[in-house]
Image (cartoon, rainbow over all chains, first blue to last red; front, side, top):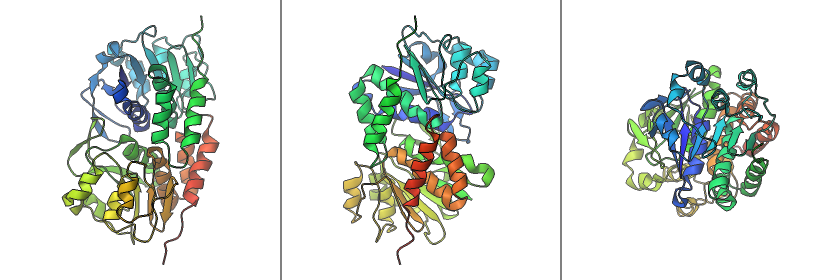
Length: 202
Length: 202
């Protein structure tokens, strides 16, 4: 199973790398994440240049698509051309967003009839698209999830692992990456966030 | 004030990017982090290629040096040539390590007389260098700090920000990056970890 972590110029390293690093701990289990970028190289909001691992067209074949966040997401949505290469199918794929990534999901009509999580900066822009924003780090309905606050990206990854490989695999990953001495609490917190997920609304 | 985030080939994205992204939220306050690498480009343990922002020689002029972790730290320490370009001065600099980065600090003699934090995988190798490993996410004495468990890198960043710009600045950064709905608890947890720091032993 392949996971596209959609990452635009100006991206927030926390959002793309926490999700991808957690998911990539499951490569032996058959789950692998790829930085999926509009151009061969993208530069983060802090000037770090990274090479993309897959083009945006990879979203069409990925089993899971997570849309990261960054300082230029509003430009990406306003431009529209960048999103022309993004193909999402919530009937077949798990789809998630981190912080301003919710703007992309909203723009593509994927948040109709469900509330969403995002960061405090993006919140008014997500609300302007008619989406109710929750005071929570994570919300999922059916195959669509949103997370808010950079470090909530661990919950997005936990949800992906739970939904693809099961809770035991997710528990193992969060346990490994959690601070020493805080592993039990970290696992419980992540699973609690993810257990709030609801079935898809009819 | 400039922070070198030392990042070798095979690096763990969580360790280098969580610390650098949190610290870079303080650029307006005069604190800036740079991926500091032995070669112009390095590739992460998950195959992500990133461009370094500073060469290892930058460690000599940086005000803070954080040594990240990865799957090849033992090779780096065994080889020794990679470390020839790393210049550290605990009298003048804040110096920290994340997970297997403790091997580098131990190898350079910086952990003499103090215990350290590291991850479960690196623990026996750190202990083999004569260092006592704590069951804790973070430990600092004087200008030297170590953190264990990938996500404890947020504590390393919190310590750097507390020591350079003060607790209010650290509080603001952790509040911003924390999951929505968990901000107060996240700030308290990070500050509690950092407050365990001790003065340098005589």
